[in-house]
Length: 369
Ligand code: IPM
Ligand code: MG
Image 1 (spheres, rainbow, N blue to C red):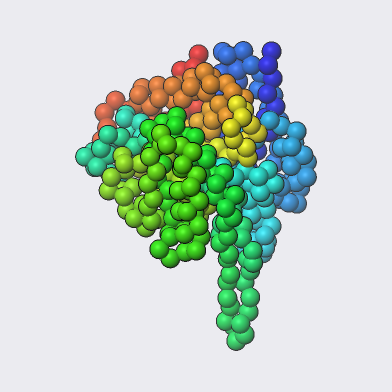
Image 2: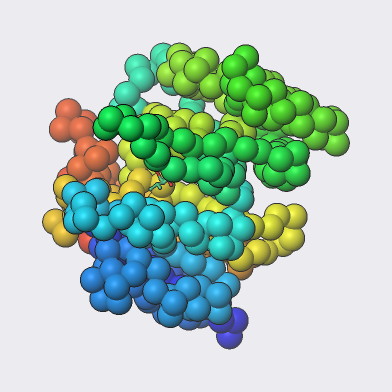
């Protein structure tokens, strides 16, 4: 039987409880499609700081290196221990480090509003137009997140200056642009490239390189949009977007906005890839929503983003397209059947039932069977 080696890093907050549901679904889909998910769990984030003293212990990193994919929960508990320096905190020391370490430059965030969830969308029905189905392609290893210098320095007299640096090289822009154009070919063949070319040097280069890269994709329509306008267009007319191509910071912001349109951040999976073009590749899969400490451990979290992230893993790292589609169909089925976690629950809606994390996971696993 085909075996796939997976590192499962549940992390903090709701991570462990949503991970449990995703692993449950993976076992079921493995039995159904005849493959074995060989899953090894390891600590990351505050869980790892508590257990091993660092947010990304060497053993966890070694496990990631030996695996074909990383299924990740979430890290970061902002309220914890302000004495631990920012460089050692999980966001930077685990998440950003893994992204950089494995050169995971291409972050794919598919945002889709299920028709059964159109009431959960903050936009009125008329504004939803033909429906919301957007792929945010976010550059993940460059820009303001990683540029140097990055520091806070004293100017004297209690006055400080913080510096973050935004840099992009042609090759970095080109490779993420290609990811966006390739993805658009499998969708509605439109790329909207987001920049701030009216103010930033980075924006001018970005626009220039993306325009040149587009020449290799004459079948795809390219449109450029300033980021402030894009934020507005998302809420005015979201159905104009197919693929949104964004640098790191803009993609971070716009993908949360887009996710809210799809009903909840708890519905948004993501794939972070280091190489594209090959049939399968090493990848990192995580819900885009974060650790949600306020609802952690209460069986309230929506496990769908984690489960859909596992589906993306099957597709992009293992080439198991039918199994990935089966998970996505099972999620749709559970929603159509009326199951709702709190984040997508509307008491005014008829035929729905408020459920917990476990029940939602069980229903999705059962829908697969
Ligand atoms: C995301 C998150 C991360 C980011 C944080 C947790 C560092 O918001 O994946 O979107 O900013 O990239
Ligand atoms: Mg974010």
